[in-house]
Image 1 (cartoon, rainbow, N blue to C red):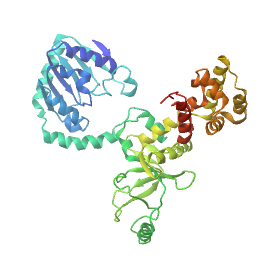
Image 2 (image 1 turned 120 degrees about the vertical axis):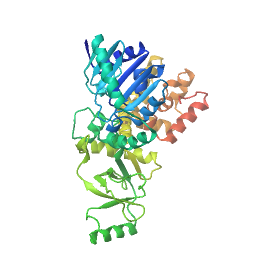
Image 3 (image 1 turned 90 degrees about the vertical axis):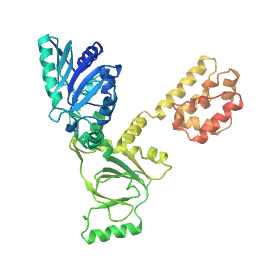
Image 4 (image 1 turned 60 degrees about the horizontal axis):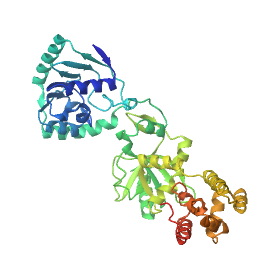
Length: 420
């Protein structure tokens, strides 16, 4: 007998099944990738009992399992066991056939902490086989209609499933803890430039005065196909020079009664059964506000609606974005490298001290080619030129496309091919 955690259990089960020609698996819940994790696609003959009615089985994975040759798949509505049996051994415990229950090496930190036992006693193995046969006989074959019904339950339940991580109150921290949780699909970020039309505003005011909607009700126009009822919206007004955070809004469950409008009401928190009550800290407001230019640039400068996953990717990219300080250090380095090959650009050094790296580069790029450029060309070291530096992928974002074009043109005029 041996105690196994979620990672050890996966290795033991795979070895057990790899050595067997037949297997009996009574495992309540099955997740994506179970076939590959367990090695069920190698031609083994197996009887598998799951609990489709629980809503905790991925119907897509069960379809794949059902299609495997040699596999007989049934469901039992009361099954909660996790038993992996072969004629030579068995593993019992808490690990379901999912990424959370059976973790690959390195993945265990993102899954549940499990406990399982490996059994090799022949008497116990025989008892498990008898128990399985009786339960399997009570199971129901899984038909197409069963899987279609389970699909809807699966989608709903997935949004409510616990994350296996510590509950927190900060929205972005909760996202970082469980970035793939389905609930995040209901969080949208609206960066809007244009206010509602005059007619839409009149309609809203009329509905408010008539008591048909709450006085605090507002609306988004043109995003009905992307903001679903009960979605959460983080609002950003980008109509001015500076983006302004407008709080959290909840889309009403009913239609507006006016084509093109999605009614919303203000909310203090984003609330999910699996994630708790979440708010946006001041620091995180700043992060999401700071990416407004990148959001608008990706949508041709117009207002944009993006999901939280996309927003977090932009936040991560902005935190890794090149800085003026970093570029100044790079400019100082090409000065030192130039000195090392016998060229001391003193004017360049003085400009760097007076104006910093970015402004110095802009002045040099927008002016005529300098004697320093010619010297580096003669020494066949244009890789140390300001023109070559600003075209490196690391620093391009600091310069306008026109400035990049000037640098590229100057380098190509003397036969130097800049880095692309």
